[in-house]
Structure formats: C-alpha cells, structure tokens
Length: 368
Image 1 (cartoon, helix red, strand yellow):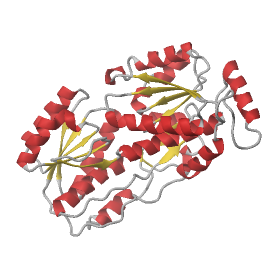
Image 2: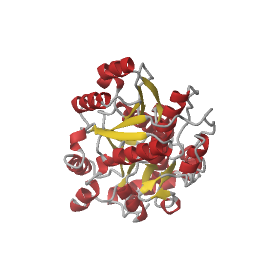
Image 3: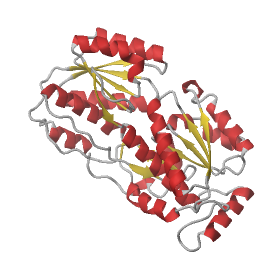
Image 4: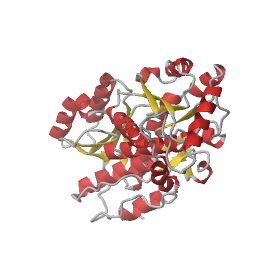
C-alpha cells in the first residue's frame, strides 16, 4: 500500500496477509472467506488501456447539416467537460450547439428544459436528470418534435427521451465492481470501507449497487458503511463528514465516493485532521484525482472518458435523425491507480482512453 497505516490498520493488514499466505483467500475475522484471487482475475484486464470506442457500425449516410443541439450543463466540473464534447461533436457534424445552465435541483432542471424548448432545437442533450423530474417538459418536447437523449440515466427510454443507454446502469455497475476489485485486492480481503454517496442522482446508486454486490461476493467479511450526502454538501459539508466518519472509525482503510466531486476538499480536510492514512477512490476521476494518483496520495478511480460520452450522445442524435438503428455498448474505460496512471491517455486534463476517438467517430459519421 502507498501510505503509512495506523497501528490498527497495520495489524489488520498483517493478519490478512498471514491468512492469505496460501495465495487465495482470507477469512475476515472468522466469517466467510474472501476470494481475493477472483477479484484479482477480474481486475487484471481493467488496468489495460482501451483502443476502441466500442462501436463500429457506420451511419447509412452523412447526416444533414444545420441541426441545432441544446445541452443542459449543471456547471459541475465533469458536466463542463461533457458539454464541451457535445459542442465539439456537433460542430464536427456541421451542427450548431447552444447551452443552458441546468443547476442541480429539480426546479432548476425543469426551468433549464423550458428554456431549451424555447430555442426550438432539433435535439436536447442531458446527463443524470431523471425522466420523472422533467416529465412535463418531455411531453412538450414530444409535441414539438424535439428529440432528447441522456447519459448517466437509470431510466428506460420514454417518449421524447429516446435514448438512455449511454453510461447507464450496466456501465455504472461495472465501474462499481472495478473499484471493489481494487479494494479487495489491495486490502487482501480485509477492508473497512466508508462509502460516500449522492442519492439525488439515481444513476449513481447503480455504482453503489455494483460496488456493494462485488464486495459481498469477494469479501463478505469486509466492513462497509454508507454515508449519504446532498449535492449542496459537495466541497462544503462532505469534507467534514469524512473527517467525522474516520474519527468515529479510525481503522477505516478505504474511503470511496460514488462521484469524484464528493471528494473535493476531502484530502486537505483529512490531512488537517491528521487522518490521511485511508485509501481514497471512487467513480469518475477529476483532473485533480489523476494528479493525486500520480503523487501516490489517492488510490483507485474509474477513468470516465467524458469526451467519448459526449460524442456517443451526438452519435445517437445522428442515428436518430438519419433513421438508423441506435447502438448500445459499454464505454471504453479502465481503472486508474498509482501504477497505471502514467500510461493513461489524456486530452489536455481530461481522460479519453482512446487517443484517436474523434477520428473513429468521424469515420463512422462519413465526415472524416
């Protein structure tokens, strides 16, 4: 492990290593054995660099130019990256792109959809907003002939919301499993985990499900406690909540976030409280998380190729406008750790995974 552990954690680790001396499992204090080798086997390919955008079906024809796409951008760092990709992808197709700030509350999201509808676009791109929140606006969109698609949704397609497949439940479950595999492997089947989650975004619960299910499968004796947060806690109350959780459970050796933004300010708070021994990781690394991995001060983050997500959404619009079948596929991704981070593919500060993703999409769109 990368850090100096507390005395309690060090003793726990030593016991786990002794129990796993036969190369497979630990008994987690007398409970059902942990299957560390299964976690290691699953994890190995998730540490490799992807080479494909994972779709290869070209459009039937070059899409008509001049379409207007409006993106709903909540303004958090990851949303800004996604919105930039929507814009670039739309422009690659000869389309116009406009943007509305959607905030994080249901009321703001509804107002943003109303504003987007007033622009009379051909399509509206969103991410993480439940269909139930904007049901009235989706009915209006359907009446106006406006198509809507979203990434990071737990909903099935409905009406104007014609595509919810990109970064959906299967993808989030996979990411949760990836982080769990690292936790089990790194702890040798003896992890004590604090999971901080953001229930306001239902899709993130799918990461939580995947993580908890994999922990239960591979490490039934691992200790896991959940800590629900609000969107307004990001960068304000969450750092203190993490400090309090670790003060109450000083043998915690993993802090996991189901959205990287929840970790904003946490590292500094833990260092200030002299509680910087726990491993840190979770879903969708921000640039600062990659830097922390490079400095060996954080431990395991899913690498979320937001630019590719944005391109996949615009690809979905192109197929819908053309009358072509939509494609469903998991995103190219990998687990970023201190050992793998230097080999990851970035575009500026943003992880993309696949260096020529833009060229691969343009070839499918017949515009390269």
